[in-house]
Amino acid sequence: MGDRLKILIIPLLFGALFLQFPLSHSLPENNTTWYILSQFNFYYQKLFNLGFSGTSFFPVQNAVGLSDTGLIHFLIYLPFRIIFKNELWAYYFYLVSIFSLNFFVFNKFLKQVFKLEKSSVYGALVFSCSNFVFGNIGDPPVIFYPFFLLTFIYLDKYFHTKNYKHLIYASLLCGLQVFSFSYVYFFLNICVFLYFLLFRYKVKDAAFFFTINLLIGLLFFYPYINKFKNGEMVGLYNNKANATIHSFMELKDFFKKVPGNIYGREGDLNNLYQLQIYAKILESKNELHYLYPVVSSTQLGELVPPVNENILNEKVIYHQLRKSGFVGFSVLLLSILGLLMFSRNKYKNFVNGLFLVGLFLCIGPYFQIGDDLWRTPLYFAYEHIPGFSFFRVPSRAFMLCLISVSVYSSVALSKIKYKGVFYLFIIVALLENIPFPMKKWKYFSPPQNKISKFLNTQDNKVLLYLPSDLGVYIFNDDKDVFAFQREYIYMNWKNYHSHSILNGMAAYLPPSRIEIQKILKNKNPFLSLKAIYNLDFVYFKESFFDKDFDNITLQDLIQNKNLSLKVQDDDSYLFKIN
Image 1 (cartoon, one colour):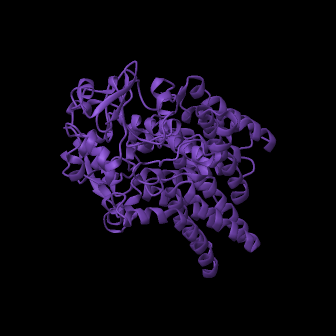
Image 2 (spheres, helix red, strand yellow):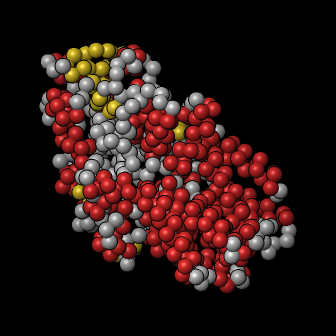
Image 3 (cartoon, rainbow, N blue to C red):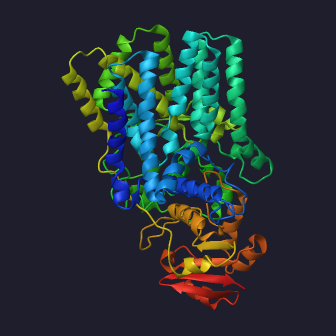
């Protein structure tokens, strides 16, 4: 396949596959996708001064230091947002770009580093179209590897030419990776260290490389360190090995295929919350130290309801589907053959090393056999090395294994002379890996109603959407939106009504968030929130409430002397705090 033809066909392939999302007014996931979209739009509004002057995670001053910012991903999204003015179509083209870039750079990686001209297309398709990649479609930074691959492309150039500019490019690309996703930056530095050892780089070259890339990395990690020191976030060090209990790769995961609709049958996920499931599982194993990434069970215990044992019978667990490590029988067969055929000793050792590093990291601090959990050597790192527990989702390292498998299978296919067999393997690999149709989650447009129009007439205020929670309650409302997702939807809406909101979540919760939840448990919390956080308005959507969980009803709000109803629109109400 010629390069010009690939440039045309590959984006069309992903464009056709993902077109089902904007055409059905939907998104590929209902959780992290909303978080990423809300952050993209926050930066977009700030960049063009379009009205929102507040912060992304009120009352915390900014999002940096609470979760990965994905600056590089915003820059990919930005031109599409400018051109189309519509966040749904902008996100669609962003998603097509992410998958296409993975293909093109991996194709170059195979051609230059491994000289696999003939089978590079196959390997690039295996890498960019695996079950694991589609299982993580809702969190694109996890599966975005161009900077990773380009680093090794330029290291390979330096190894052969000794031209120092290639080493400079490699170190800069490695450093910039942190602004795409910190996990991949961590994996990349480990793999570069392995590369330097195997290819016996000079100490001064290695020192130059790591000095440049780590200085760039510090620009990213400094806000995390600063916010931890200032007490603005729950400590990274509280996130011990047990926080990874739902996200390490198990033996069965390496044979798990993503179902055609990605997140299971309609309603399966919306009627459960994995935190409760794992709370029950961990409790039975006497391993329950940390329920939520960095919030201890003591802190969260006052806020979560009792575990509903009925949900243990549900078949779909959210994080489990992000661990679909099956690559297909045809790819597996070629990979084994490729491993045996691979004759370039140093490169073979490097690819083997990538696989072993990925396997070691993605298994994480535990290895499960049946119902028993066995601690791995990484357990010590998670429990005792400061900051290591930042990497609370070990399964993401499976991408390193996928790189190796893609190289191995390409090596084997390069030995096949018959084009018919070559194309047959491509078709079979795609059929075994691409889920279709994919699960489509409803996209909620920013509301254009009486309340929105009223808010647009107000200067920047502090707004509370109710109900507000940590995502552990289930609300079977009219749109079947469960709590964790709804928080992210509200975060996105704030970019349109130009007001700070007390809602909002990230992978790491600021202590203020926990305090807000405690105050909301009181009978009349609004005056307290006004005094502490300068709360001005409360937005209440009646259908979001469930009498089994919430202590506040519409009647309570209407009769509350400290509130005055400003706007009503259908089942939505906006109250001002007097």
